[in-house]
Length: 274
Ligand code: NAI
Image (cartoon, rainbow, N blue to C red):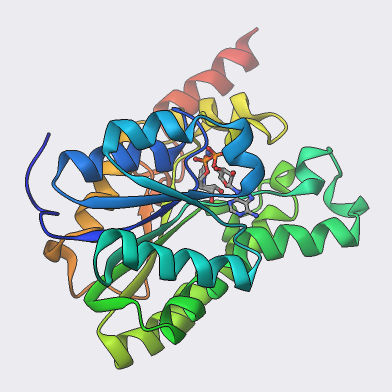
């Protein structure tokens, strides 16, 4: 559905790698709803991904930035304000990577250098993004900043390994910075806790197809897909959500409030009978 609820708003979308990425679908939806975007990703992702295809579709400029580098982020924000012709109304942080998960290291066998990287890329980068935006004073009043998270921050999903810790830190950063940004600039900061979604980052988690299947059966509405997430982000960037801040917003078809479902009971009973 396309509306004009983002008409006149401009901002940065981090993390569109390919057409499966949540950030990719979000960029399309922001464009469809009248918003103006600048796209960014890590230099290696720009070389390997397809961001230029997306940039053409949404009429966006692209600036590369490693979200773990202060210098890159400073150059990104300065360049974005120049190219977009003013301050920003929204930022989407859609970034996640764990070398331990990628290389199949279990939680009781972590490589600590990689653990640092996981936290730096997947969580501290959110603080870096906001601190840089704050210091350079690039946010408009009543702007909206979002990061994407997963319920493994609250509940144990063993194969999610050190990413669970990164997501817990990410959600905590949203609250701590949300307080400051709310007071100083009336900027809101939230995380969206998304259902398991079939993307490059998602499918890197061992046993991911089981995550998706289980969550689908445990959610009264079924799993929220990347497009549903993009629509929710549009709502959160619009003025319709202007008093929502410092929240971890569950976008999961009801998964987080469900104890068990008939679907799961049936599978267990069928198994017992066989
Ligand atoms: P994706 O693989 O398409 O996106 C991850 C992005 O992070 C990529 O574009 C990658 O280039 C970027 N990235 C990695 N290191 C970076 C760095 N140093 N600097 C800048 N960018 C960097 O996968 P997806 O699923 O769209 O992930 C987006 C967000 O959604 C992540 O935070 C992920 O944890 C979160 N999420 C994903 C779920 C899923 O099941 N796919 C479920 C819940 C949350």
